[in-house]
Length: 188
Image (cartoon, rainbow, N blue to C red; front, top):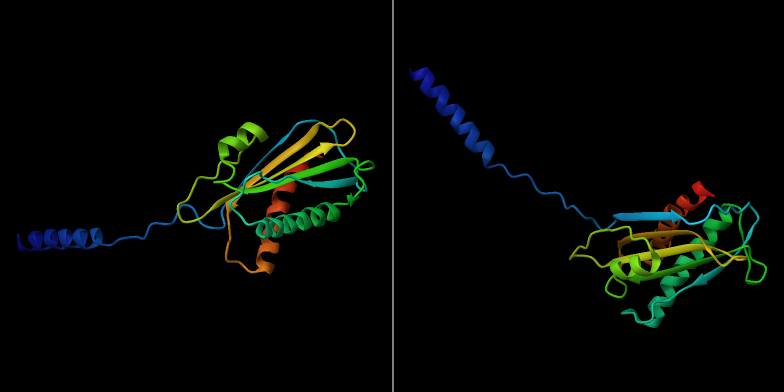
């Protein structure tokens, strides 16, 4: 009986001890999370060597200072041009001779909500909000220069890296652009 009682007490003690162990909860949303979606609107394709022009679109009212907005748009413009060039396309400043236009915009969620993006752009990646970080969106589209119709649209949402160095921001912009544009290339 003492053996049974001792075994039962040992079992209860081990259950109580294991019940006191806490496992830290993983943070479900981390700062580097990225949600991406895209849609092909027309079956139009562009061969390598095709000329493209760049057309940034700005949010009318933004919480960023004008200099901050210009810096972010410069980072993304450079990343878009580098990515398209690496895939065999050529930038032209003359929109009259380009075969396709690349339009893009960047905004924080409190300047451009998911609901507005979905209403005006037609797709939203749906990254959930996080109280610790500012969520932002990168929207990009390919428009056929001849017809003026959208061929492809892509969107990425992530969290702003406000305290990153200039080099880190350029790298992050390049990664985001590459991941979104990959969806264009596979359907082109």
